[in-house]
Every structure is written in C-alpha cells, then in structure tokens.
Length: 260
Image 1 (cartoon, one colour):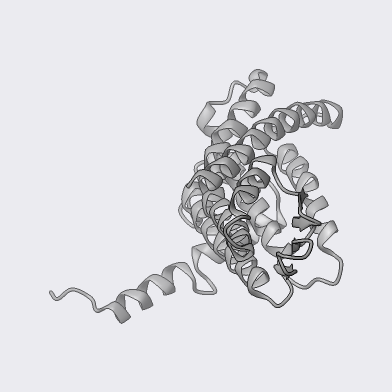
Image 2: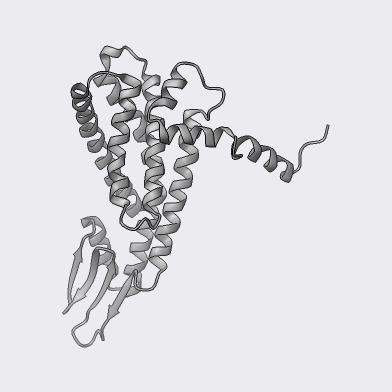
C-alpha cells in the first residue's frame, strides 16, 4: 500500500479536523457558547468527538499569536507608524520617533524617552550616536521579539493558573490535572477573544475584553458549582495571583527581547 500524497494527506486531515462537521468546529462551538461545558464533558469521560485540551490550546494560541504578529508588523510598516523627524545635527540636533503612545528622540540636543521601558530607553540612547534610523530599528526588533516570545510565556502561565485554582478549590478534592484542563480551555477562549480585538468591530473591542472575566465566572460555575459569593472571592484570589505572575512574565519577555 503506497503512502498518501501531500494533497491526499491534506484532504484527509482537513476533512477530519477542519470540516464543518469536524471535531474542531464542534469543539469551538461548545467552547464559546457554553462556558465550562467542554471541561465538564472531558472530566466526565466524553472526549471522543472533541479536540483534546492541549491540542486545542496550542492550535488556537499559535494561530492568534501569528495573527497578532502580522498585525503588529503591518502597523509598524504602515506610513506614519514609526515616524522619524530629524534636523541638521549642526543646528540644535534633534529628531523624534513616534510609535503609538510612545516617543523617543532628541530635542535641542537632549535625549527624551516616553512610554517605553527604562531599559529600552537606555538602549535607544546608546544607539543615537550612530544614526536616528538605528533607533527605529531597535523599536521594531524589540516589539517583534516581544510578540515572538509571548506564546511561550503564556503557555507557562497555564500551569500557574491551574495551581491557583487547585489552592482555592481544595475542598473539591479535584486532581491538579483536572484544573489544568479547565485552564487550557479558558485560555483558549481568551485567545479567541483577543483575536476578536484585532478585527474592525467599530468600538466593540472594549466589550470583548470585558467578556473575558464574565466568561471565566460562568465557566467556573458550570465546572465547580457553588454560590456566587464564594465564586467571586475565589475568582478575586486567582486573578490577583495570576496577574502578579503575568506581570513578572511580561517583564521577563521584555527583557529577553531586549537582550537577544
């Protein structure tokens, strides 16, 4: 029996994974429309017709991060995204780089940097003596490296999220891996919501961001049960711990992007 050709392999894979009746679309529908139900079914042993949690998370996160990187690159390459305004260095040397809400450059011979990490500002200042264009390249390299390493940081945050759930739900006597399944499903949905913010929704992006905590609370209700009061308290504890770890992770990703 001969091995399938590339076209045949792609057709078989697409038919089983990406078709209208395939596992991926069935899983996405349940993930988005019934928060927590996908986790509940998985823990109950009903896994045959749905994408496994880790595969679902990796598929969605990789696609969303790729889209985020493409949008960021398009924004940086768009006219006026990174603007350099230079003057004759012999007469009050000055130039400015504008990137979204951040600015850096020279004014009357004095360096300024606003809206950027202090480490990046120092790095930019060291490169000013070379040429102004080098500063713009440094900003582009930093943002590209930051987005490129964001996926790994988020993947490492999922186990932390599951650990925090384990701590606040000790009375449920669930295994850590069961909390991890919930964390993978919730993070997969968060990535999908982030992808929605990349679309031209006419100002609805803020509502999409607000949907994240609402979705998480609804998912917690379906999977863990309990009253709303205790659920709010547990969610507050998990959110505080998670945001703390997330902040350190983002700083780490930023520093790594600067040093590489």
